[in-house]
Image 1 (cartoon, rainbow, N blue to C red):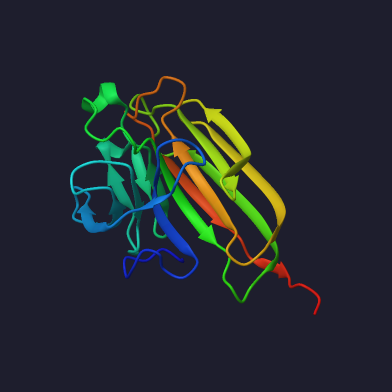
Image 2: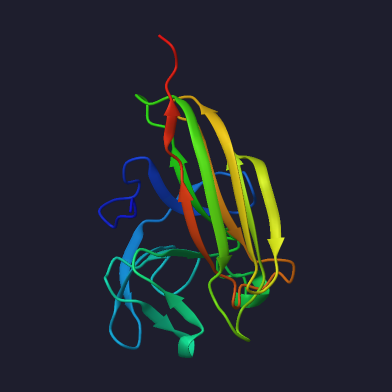
Amino acid sequence: RDFSLASNPNGAWSYGYEDTLGSPFVPFTLWKYNYDPAGVPVEVWNIDYWTVPAVQHNATTSTVVTDGGQGLYPPGTVWFYPGPSDRDDGGYNPHDNYCVLRFTTPSDAPGDYALNTAVRGAYTGPISGDTDFHVLLNSREIFGQFLPPEGSISFSDTLSLRAGDTVDFVIGRGADDSYHGSRLIIDATLPQVRTPKR
C-alpha cells in the first residue's frame, strides 16, 4: 500500500538498482504505466522506458493477466525484475544487475522494526525462470537465497534501526545469470514495534 508514482523516494520507500550487492544504490528516475492485454494499467518505476530492472504495482481493483495467463497479479500486488546480463542485452547498461526496493528509517522514527517478507516466482508455467533474493541491512546481506523457477521463500527478523539505516529487498537473475522469466512477487512489511527509551 506504500507504493507510489508521486515521487522516488516516497516517504521511507525508494526504488532503484545496484551493480553488485551492497554497491551504491541508484534510484529510478522514470515512471510510466504499462497495460495488460485487457487494458488494466500497471504502475512502473524503471531504469528507462523500454527495459528492466523495474518494479511494478497493480493499483486497480482488477487482476493483471500477462503472458497467456502465466502471470497473474491481483489488486495490490508488487513485483520486480532484475536487470539483464551483458549476454542478454549486449552490455547496454552493465551496472543494473539487481533491482532494489529500499526502506530508509525516518529521522524521527528510530527503534525496533518487525521485518516480514515473502517472495515467490511471478510466473507459473514454462516461462518461469530462476532468481535470487536478498535482504540487506545498511548494504550488508542478512539473508540471501537462490530460488528455482516458481520457487518461494520467506524471511522474518526484528531489526534495531537508527535514523537513516537502510533495509534493501533485492532481486537478481538467479544461478543461470539470465533475466528471462526472472521476476518475483513480493510482500514486505516493516512496522515499528518499539521506540527507544528516552
